[in-house]
Structures are given as structure tokens and as C-alpha cells.
Length: 231
Image (cartoon, rainbow, N blue to C red; front, side, top):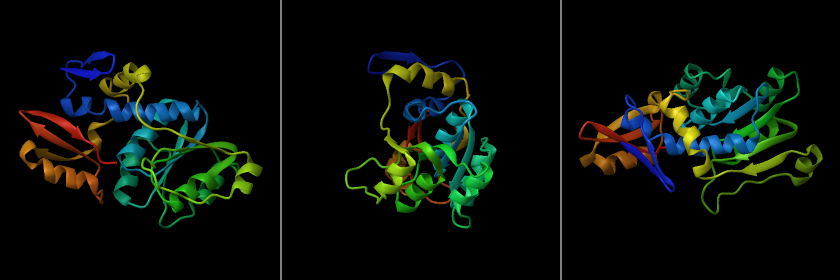
């Protein structure tokens, strides 16, 4: 098997399942976002949203050496985050996430926040949980017309940076493949649903409408599996 990229092909290691190899692209996009955020060893990072992408971002931040606090409102996603290594998992439906982050960081706030959920409330969490001079990566908003309100005066006074990241980079594809094939980022646990090829419409429907118990969805054919993304 080969994972075909713009500049050629990356051989898939023996023992790596097709459904694992299908994660190279989403891991690449998440790795690019983490690098753009400047995540470093010893930093505290908040990842808002623990769907499949948020769980990948959390693991890559841990791989980079950061302490990672996550938030979500679904108990099963918070439990998965704990299983995969989150230092603290906060239920956004019951706690004040920015206040808890500041409490956990001696009042300082996180160095970096990665936004893996879209909307005014998640954006506010990320912004308020980040320390003065910190960085917020907007990763979840991918379509024109997805807007939030921001107090530019407060943002400027605190000198926080709002950055964006989107898509994969061929320049880091080898590293993304290493993380997946070497299982340094655990991806198989994220697969919650598998469908045969003749149920592709149903698979896409499940993937497009995340719900409790739904993370990644894959299509299977001939003993292999091809990933269908469900953010």
C-alpha cells in the first residue's frame, strides 16, 4: 500500500492497518496547526472541543511536550481525552472553563489555545482561557460565513494573537506518517463506526452529524478500511 501525496508516495509500514493510514492527512493538518501555534515543551495548552480533530490536536500537543487541558460538553469525549493523555478534562456544560484554566495555572492562563469546536461560546472559552500575550489558533471554522464577535480593544490590550490554520502541508507529511505509523498518536481508538462500502451514504450521514458515541467513521471493503472524516 502507498499513501499518495502531491510529491509522490509514502510507503505504509507493514502491520499498519488501512484505517490507521487514513489518518495521515488529518494528523498532518493538526500537526501543522500545532506547529503554527508554536507549542513547545513545558507550555500549557488548552484544546477546546474533543471531537476527532480535538483529540488529535491534544495528542500532538502532548507529543510536543506541552501539558494539555481540554474541554467539551460530551462525557464520552471527555473520557476518551483522559484515556489518550489529557492532563485535565473539563466539562464545559458544568464549569467555567477559563476560570478553571486560570486556577490550574496559578492565575496566569494557558500559553496557547486551540479551537477545535466552532461557535461564540467555544471561541470565548479559548480567548478567555489564554494568558496575556498568548496565542489562539482557530482551526474549526472552515467555511465562509462562520463568524464570531470579538472585543478588539480587550484583545489588543492583552496582546493576544489570533491565528488560523487550515489544510495539510506536504512539507510535514513524512513526520505526520511517522506519528501515525509509529502509533505515537493513537488513532484506532478514535474509530467508533465501520460500514461496508454499500452503506456509504449511511456512513457519510453519521459522519456529518456527530453525536454522543460518534467519533471517526470508516468505510470497509475487501478486508481494508478507508477513512471518512467526522470532525
